[in-house]
Image 1 (tube, one colour):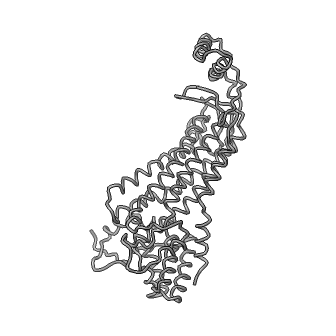
Image 2 (spheres, rainbow, N blue to C red):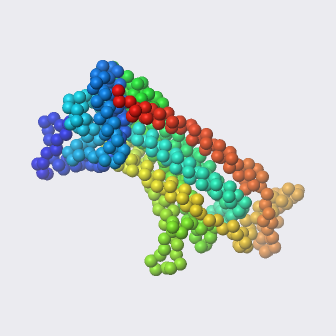
Length: 452
């Protein structure tokens, strides 16, 4: 190992070699750029509270808030940099304050640990990401409902065991994935509620001898409540990410399944739908090919996202109470996952909007047998025992004597003729309203507005 030394604000007498520093920090500087502006927000709330308990003067608070707001704006513009030799975002922010303001910059860490700093950073980051995912999921939902209503009367085969089974419709197909997203959003809202609790003030996991006002920072940051028990607040590291990952995996599972259907229905053997040309690519050798690459990549990315909760679980599941450096590795798999899911949702909404439906699928006689249940039910309604009707129609099909009646009339809730899309829409609207993102937005806007 080389003898180069790395020094930071936490260094005492022992110096790290470059190799050890590289191993222990890993991708943390890169990952912490996701958290930069949230670290600043947490510091703004924390020092406002410190001033209220006389650990900062009013003048010190004023200059610190002004400079922190400037750093926040740098992060917003993508100009925030964690310098070489600086371990993490917390150290970088404190270093920038100290360079500009002198010793007053060193006061912001009173009553905190990097443990509760990263916890609050993560929760603030996750809140924003959940809001974006919820909005993008709602956009995909809207496209699905629109297409369901547009093609509600276009019949298509329904399948079991990949065998032609019974009549379905594009109204049902699009609407099914829309309602699936409603349940996924319920899961996302549960993750939101777990996330939207304030860990700040738990310090290293055992509280502080300073008379911290944790309710004040909870209100300043727009959290619904605090993580009350300081030990539990630290135990929430990893658990929060895992729960959020499960909700993301739920959405990803719905999108992956839909992408698989669309790729299959787009193939020549089915010919049920046509994907937008700009979302397909050609073959290097076969001039007739239009491969559904965008949805195939969407499927793969979403399947990868479904592994995320297990990855996080395996990193954290054998750790006892307290902080361990293992948790740092969760950032590397967790933070970038939001962008991947958001990209998939955007692509899916675009394709669903542009997708064309084959309105003449049933002109092909190979789909005639799927109307057999309709005939069985007709005979049963006229008084024939169901099992006798089933046998008669089966024998007619075998003898080539079955003639389908394709004019079907399903009326019960959620069927071909009664999609209940208005009810599904109301369910989604209710879930979206339950997030109450405006409380978070108002609190953060007020925090950034205040400089005194």
